[in-house]
Amino acid sequence: MVRLLSNREKTFSKSFNVKIIGIGGAGNNIVKYMVNSREWPSFCNIIALNTDYIALSNLGENMKDIFILGSEELNGNGSGGDPETGKRAAEADIEVLKTMLEGVDVLILVAGLGKGTGTGATPVIAKAAQELGILTIGLFNLPSIGAEGEKTYSNALLGLQNLALCCNGLTTVNNDKIINVDKEKMSIKKAYESANKYIKTIVEEIINIITMPSDINVDFADVRNFFEDKNGFLFMRINVTDYTKDGIKDAIETGIKTGFSDVNIKNSEKALINFKLNENVPSYVLENTRSALKEIVESGNVNIVHGVAYNDVYEDAEVNILLTGSFDISDVPLVDIPEPKLASTESSYLGGASNSTNSVYETLKEMDSNRNQESLWSDSLDNTNVQNSYPSTAKVLGLPDDDTDDVSYVRDRQQPSSTSRFSQEYGSARYNSQNQGYNRPSSRYYDDEDSYYSSRRTPAPKKKRSLFDRIFRRNK
Image (cartoon, rainbow, N blue to C red; front, side, top):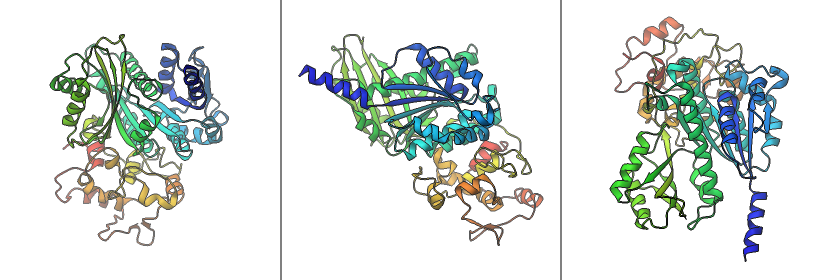
């Protein structure tokens, strides 16, 4: 019987494949920290991808697997902070990337968003994994606005939305939230180290839940079911010494308030809990944790699956919790960015073509179409399914629909170029070139920028500001 169990373990380790990929400078630093901090199971393969050869060469001897993206086009010189360049680099090596993903059961992508390679290349990899049916989990670092700038932050939000289309589950680590823990003493270097440690902890716990034997087991099927609806998710680890329901509830609420993520769990539907307990911990801690969690989640209807491992090594009760959730823009610091210029020649990585005038502002406007769509996530990026599959920015970030009511003027103003990358990839089915506007009953079209902006000086009164106004226009 013992030998049979051993054989099963060997078969499992050979057949189960977890791949952890760090993309771009921040992603490389995270996986570097991971390989230097511990030895990982044989079924875990950790890879660093970058467009910058020097950055890859400085990762050290423990980082065994590295790959230069877009080497023929960029010659290892990096993306220059341009997400479009990072995207092209990944697309150029897409066949190599697909080969890299063959046989993978779980793909964990780690990256910093806002700059070139992490923001541009990661969605390409995630989409390839989605097409191969791989369970894909994204752990993404959001930049500090004050330390890294408004443009970087804006690109990060756009990158986050693009990744939401392709990842089964994703969570964020917000550098500003880390800095705010101790603003007087927290340096940027320490903030990055805290982010690296937090992401490593999430990766460890996901792997532990899937693979570690326990007294009450949670298996891979439970993990896949947790992520099957494509949600954001929140992770927290709490040490419980007060086993009453109120004591556990206080510990969970403190973990949420002091956490580094922007995921909102008030309407959470699923939870995975992994208990690591000393044998002297009373059994009612399980029931009290479940009850406390249901009281914290506003719907009170969260489906909880838990596993339990008993070991004398644990002093009290370590409780690791994964909760599904959504991204709420009100939890992400907003910035005061000057009025966008429509004549800008800067193109976003999603809008793409060199002859397009789409800036990050214009791209966000394009993303706010189809706001009445039922599903938050898309199963396909095919051109034929674009109207039903491309979600609004508000929904990806967890906003109610009425917060986007007054972006209709944005959709009316758009004139997508037939040669733009966005038009080529996602189509422009809603645009009527003869009427020079979208096919909407109350469509308005502005002949020039002056009439466009003058029309905004006397807008119809609205109770709530649009997502575009809330992020990119001055607070008034």
